[in-house]
Amino acid sequence: MSRLLTRFALGLVALTLTAAAAQPDPVVETGDVSRFYSLYDATGGHPTAEQLQAYIDGGSEGLRQLARLRRVTGAAMADAMGKRPEIYVGARRCAAVLPRVRTRLLASFRKLGELYPEARFPPMTIAVGRGKPVAIGSPVNGVQVGLEALCAADTLGSDPEERFVHVIAHEYAHTQQNRALVDDEHPTVLEMSIIEGVAEFVAELTSGSVSNTGLAARAKGRELEIETAFVPDEDKTDISKWLYNGLGTQQWPGDLGYWVGYRIAKAYYLHAPDKRQALKEILEMNDPKAFLAKSGWHPGIKLD
Figure (cartoon, rainbow, N blue to C red):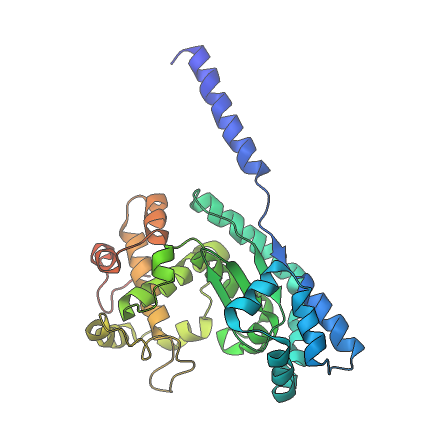
């Protein structure tokens, strides 16, 4: 290569690195939490439905989006505060760790950008809602987190800071996934398990842990049993045995589809010679059956 071409190539590298360094951090909005607790304190912990509606209407775009997507209204919040006042009191301990959570999340998002250069960085909002949902994430709407709901979800991990970081990293992975699959109204067990499992795997890569550490602990060592039961259900559209079923039972933990999907995604990654390309294919997956076949996964596969 000539000196001129060498200098040109080095210049392109420098420009690329400069552009990457200049990329602004994603928005991590937490101001709605302060606004809520100012209202909460001013009303002795008993704001009216009208006051809570004003809190929503005057809040961030992320809070208003959460309200639209998950029926968060002033009336619903007032009802939740009447029935479960302890979660709003308890959420203050989680509000206290938000500065550290924000710092760690920005590092996680940067790691995502390094591993997956095609990453998009929509805003992420932590607000106070009606006691649910814990968090939602999509390619279109970014991520919204209910402070009070996630703070109360100690089955996901006992340390609030760790829980917030890993759950939000999971939800942020959803913002990178194939929109048609994420928004599919009638997914199969396999499709939904891989979607959630991919988010768990990406959370582990970028933040250091899966979001549901309690589930991982309960499922570990039972891979063959759980995954043998999973195979006959792969093509079913009744996902209630595997996903979004809470704590489950002592014998059958809830949300095991997350665990199986995580192991399928991890098998795909570990078997791929090019890890960067593998992560791209994992996040952009649009054919669950083909993805499963290529992953090399089978019930009880050893991944450690």
